[in-house]
Length: 278
Image 1 (spheres, rainbow, N blue to C red):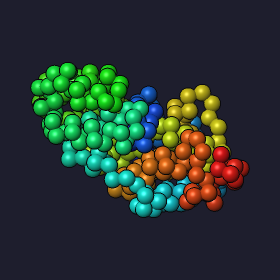
Image 2: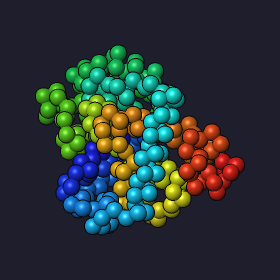
Image 3: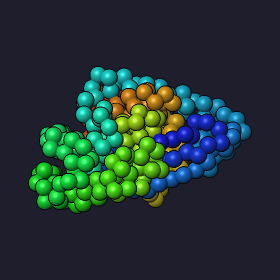
């Protein structure tokens, strides 16, 4: 299914979490990028222009239109996963750990059973690793047990049972990582945030016919693009994130994307270059 950004205001620090998955295909943090917005920059990274160029304005309008189309698509097609409206950051953190490299529909029954058995971080702290393993072993990746246990121990011992409320604080929680921390900020705390992951790379490469060299998810232009693609309003940013994750899983798939059914096909360069949707 995601770092918090304050990038839209001049002179502030922008923080982005970079991950592998998105909750459509499992989430896994990779790196952390911090940069500072120039007072009159048109985007983050290496570009510090004194005014908006016409090409940048056209791109901004195109990205805004794409975001609105994805939000509308999400209203009609997105799945209503419980971790997208958790009661608290604990439920969000559990989901992020279970979602690592695992399809959401596979973890859904396990997630619900897990929260029934361990509804609070205190209950999880009391459980043994063997008990936790019995709950989640059907998902594989047994090292998740250690992440869950370490997270609970830290929150109880170091935080008095309370999760941090900032992205920086969440990054200190064992087992959470940068990507999960940003997802907690987005879905549990309802703060504007955006995720840079394999879905983001695929979307920008296809929609704009871009190719990124090296570790694409660390690319500053990609990060800037996802920042600009994400609406400023927190509620709208959440709706976009939900729609985007499902859209990338179900339509703009890694293999055999459904270009003929895509709501963005008119503006997508990949669709025009690959009319058969390959």
